[in-house]
Length: 248
Image: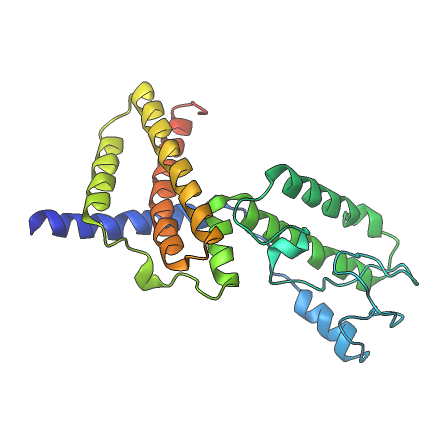
């Protein structure tokens, strides 16, 4: 009974630590003013979202950034599905190089220097669009956030009650790994622990990919929760190594 209680405490503490690490890991993006732009462009001017906000020409492609007729920057047609923003297939195993290439392409087109002589509307749209692209990239770049986004798109996102794993053996393993981390400052041991943790993350990443391919969302959620624990542990290991002046 004492062991199980200790495991449950670990589950709660470990995930609480993860939450802090996870949300601090990514840079804060300033609030997106896209909704205000959409309201001004589409409601006040009575244009349909699939038409140019300035001249009213029909927009034929989600990927088109500029109006074919008046050449002004358009508001994004897609704001919820981050895969579509980068014209990527909606799957877990994505091409990281392709994602980065599409990201660089969009950011180059949306760079503030290109809109210094443009109207206030275009400047605001470019700022909002660029912020959206950053948000989408940060979600797809990391496997954990990408998996959570896929679950959300498929209507089965994690809730607070599902953030703990009902697996005593796994929780015992995590307890031992956390205790090992807390009791060592030896660089070589920390590096070895980091390698062990990365290996587990690679295995879980493959498991998640298979689950999404088979549309087994229940099992995918199980592995995503486990990935959270290992991600939290990895963040802590790397934080300690950085404090010791080591970049692993």
